[in-house]
Image (cartoon, rainbow, N blue to C red; front, top):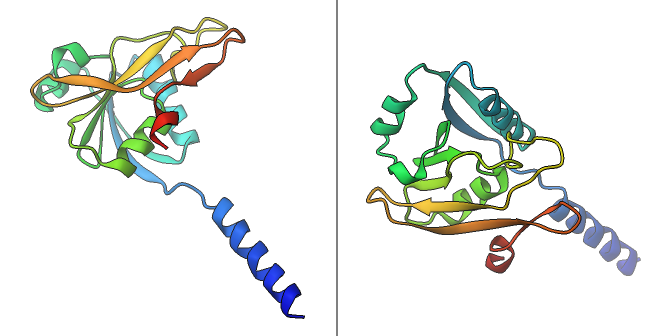
Length: 163
């Protein structure tokens, strides 16, 4: 009897440990109303349990200036979450890691618009890309790096080493 009760308790604990859903997190995304890739990136965030506040603007330059985004980090859309700047097509998992680790940085960026990043899917073509972390002084370093393998799948090089 004791063994079966222990087995039931263990199975309940293991189910709970694996069934935990990521907490939905609110993110404010500033984008041009005519940008389709930005809208696709928003869909990527929503599919990954983020609550998106979609802020349409015809003056993205003023948004980037207001948050003091370093010029080298610019891309098409700018998001704010928990005080961090998220610039461009940053994968949702990297945003989750940023929120969990809370490094002393201003934010994350995938500069420009590499093909294959979330929201920039174009058929089978995929570019290798880097997610940078940056500070307000324009200093930056690699937060994560994605490379395409021989089967055309992305592998993140750095987050594997962090966990």
